[in-house]
Image (cartoon, rainbow, N blue to C red):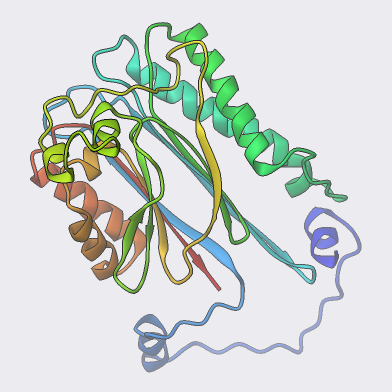
Length: 298
């Protein structure tokens, strides 16, 4: 645990003057910047986000949260990330209040649970399972919204990344995707919408679902009803790929293959997020747009 002793206090390491430095040449810098085979000795998460009010809305009812950290030392590395997108329900009072309360409540609950593990000299992992922690966080958010923004509602898609595992808590029709380097993109959440339910029951086809007149009607949302049943599950982080969370302001107007192409062609995650936001706005921007992309390297 030498890493933790140095980070939080302890005996200072002796200072030596045996190390020498020299500036890199222009050729060396170019070689590093344009290398196609970057090797990462340390396993870590990289993340970026993007958001826009869109072209047809005056108020942004989307909220997002992203936190990424890594603890590393002789005992190994622990990538830790928490990513949340919430889309306040249009047509309800205080939709923006509901989405903001959702991400703050869920994030606060989870971070408090992991604070002793991440920041204490003698770390103790939470007693509950990751899925139990997510369940309790969503339940707390439900109570907060019903108290602070009654008659409102919001979607919630949260991803807790610990090492190579992703635990998802999901309510509504924001989405989480696995984006694979071999050219596949896969929705890993299930829309809690009327149109999706009709499609699942076989009453309408996928093509009919795309143009269904009541696509935005949800049968399950955070802050609505007395009993809430979020979808909570754990999956492996997509190796050599990406995890993407987004609101329907993106996936509802940009085709999956177009999203995949923009992610793969972008020089970095920040540019990928910006390209996706711009594409949604170019398609008319009928709704607020939020996106988070996460990559696990090393």
